[in-house]
Length: 178
Image 1 (spheres, rainbow, N blue to C red):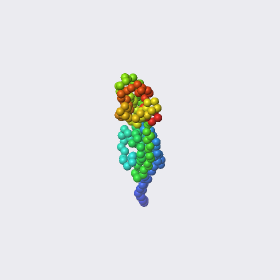
Image 2: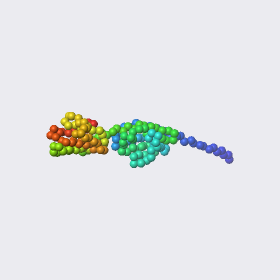
Image 3: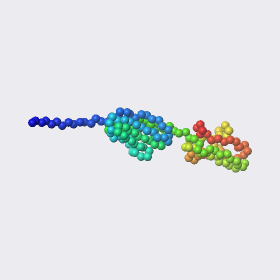
Image 4: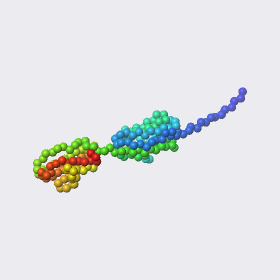
């Protein structure tokens, strides 16, 4: 009885990207999800620019067999940029664009009734800090001794000093198209 033996070595093929990441646009405060597909199950890592990302409340990383997914939560404008999924020496990159939410009024101006000679402070609150313009009727107000404008945080304030009868009218705070 004769016998012969041979050793068979099977070299694993590297995992390749079957489906690349796609560029994505999302709104500020939303969640963006980047997805790619590999030719076979394999561990991946994620980068933003050249910084390696770690799983956190902000970055949710999922892998299901050949599918890899990165969720970026509570988007802000700084989250925009290039994201890369890395597997061995293979990688795929996509660009995330984050569109800013417009500022909206959270608290409107309130009507005021004051005595001649006094000062009054009109104020409103925005959903986020943004530049505003103050008007009386259609006339744009400029900062002066009479009109003091300030914007602490998300609040817009107009102080009108030394009121007289001619100061009566409709005052408007304008922000973007709001």
